[in-house]
Image (cartoon, rainbow, N blue to C red; front, side):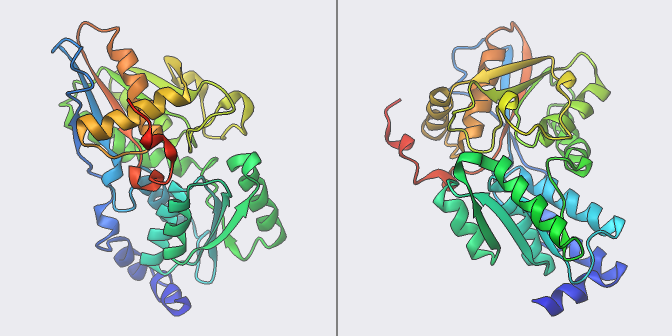
Length: 320
């Protein structure tokens, strides 16, 4: 694998060819799905659409940001032959790094909270990642602290994208996700709703939509308390705030309870045929809340990842 790493990254031609790899070409251009059954109580003049990011090849919206940060690292000369990519993750960005790293021959080391779902850990192991499990009580904040210490000790060994503080994260969404939403709604989107983790999706899409039309209203989504069960989402008041986060971008900030997110995640599977994760349920619950205030409009939200990463969670067995 090390030889492949050198061959792929050693020349501009090699880098360009690798980034056109068949798997990597499938990142983005995900469908925009109109939700019908969970929105049956809304007037026909109000539409709620979900961007099906779980259909990316790595199974989540984070494929876009991971590819954007790796491309940026190559362009800047920060990612060079012999270096290992290292970052902290709640799972999805890590899986995207792992997939892209495997395709490009880049070794990947990840720090992941030990309470991440068993499915995520197994996926990362399948890609051959060097996985470090950190204190579950510290969440991704603890994983970030671990990575910073390790990089500080051996700076020449690692390429550290630092997804929480890397502008290439949100720019990937401004360049792709936001543009796709405008195109797929025929520029009719009136409201955008997305949860906050690294904040890259919300920040990038919101900036792109507001650049097109400042009247488009954009809503951020957070858990309602620091003790929540929505993996990947941050309660900003009690978390390490990402450097790319700008709270002034949001027209309003919506809070979602864990049980509300669980219930909507089950409904999306059983009523819409969309097997997605818990943060997707939180996004749709918040999007419905926005839609219920409208007489007409086009509300767009994000289905962040596939539900197959949470099948060991007991909430699936609860009744609607």
